[in-house]
Length: 514
Image (cartoon, rainbow, N blue to C red; front, side):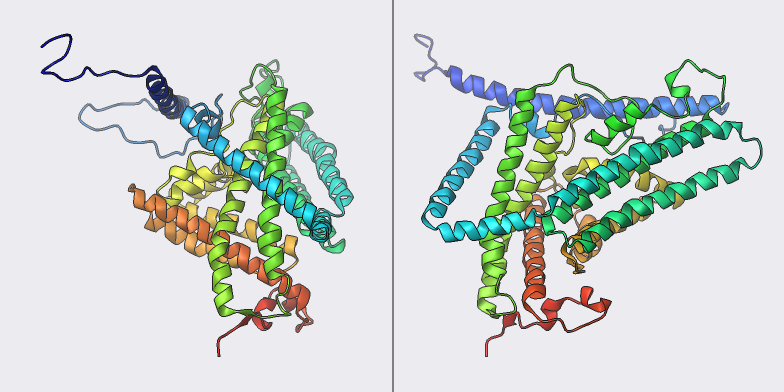
């Protein structure tokens, strides 16, 4: 041993930069792990307190045997809101992952520059593509009018009706059940009107795809919000007794209209009187998120024009050779995958975070780390947690109770309802029924849930990614084929069957080799 060395070996040394990088990555892992465990602990604590409260109210004394293990509660816990960031917001704080974001941003900037140079050299192509984009966003004044109509109907029609029922039902002495049934019937009529009137406007005015999708997305969102508002506050009205705890806000039979208006714009489908709130609004963060939404829209325009329009616009006029079609099907994986990323990042991260920041909405867990999933069950729960929370709170929990605590039966009901809603949106948006999404969702989606159940190896994560890319690619190809087949191919059915029978099946779309 000499000069601080052992047996002639050089001493170990750590560079400050390497240590900083390691500690930053370790910090991100610790924060994610603590956030996940803390959320689970809060859920368990709240659920245990609710169970104890119910047992105390029912006069049941809890007796624990030291020899027997504590049984898990059979009741499903409700949705709880906590103050937390989105998953990607936390991940961007890690230097390595922030570099991945910067790489993607640089690639998109270079892509936009190349497209700009391309259009500057080909003005005819620029005018053609601009006209297509202008058409897809056309008649937006009708979209604006329908949007205002739906929101105003909730504030000025549904809310006064619900408030009148909630505040006067305690005064009804006889036939209170009939009074409640009448309100339930009126609410059903309102929901049917909210479903049928916008769809009829879309078909009557022949709105283009993007405008139609905007109306249908808002229609679905508002229908789920109105259901949540009535569902959460109907039990409050049923429990209400006048002159009892009148000073408490929760004892009122109906919340103020301001809480409903906040809920209509809040990035959640679960109604609460109060949500976790952030202390202030970062307007620069709001502007940056909306700018990224615009970038995602421009990014989606590129695969839509260069892959869909330029490839399928001659469907029905010139048959595609089978070899070329197989090449298109292979390339659809990349186009569908790009659209999947842009929809996720632009909608579930940027758009929802921008509105959450403007409203100081604290719980921003709009999605989870679905990219790490090895099972489709967890992927469906993590991809869009806003809709998942609604399905869990108002469909799954009810079906779980009605079907005798059957999780599989409740899951199948949720899958069927979700598949029907998705197919309804696409059918009204495109003005034809092509049930590919319904089939993939209601059959293969359910089968893959059971196949990948309790799978943890990395192979199943690769399998999940491959399935997602292939699914989005198939949807892109076949819906594009059917769209242009209905433009270029002559109509063969004069009845309503023309909207149900795919025209691409009867049209000369693919030429087989001789």
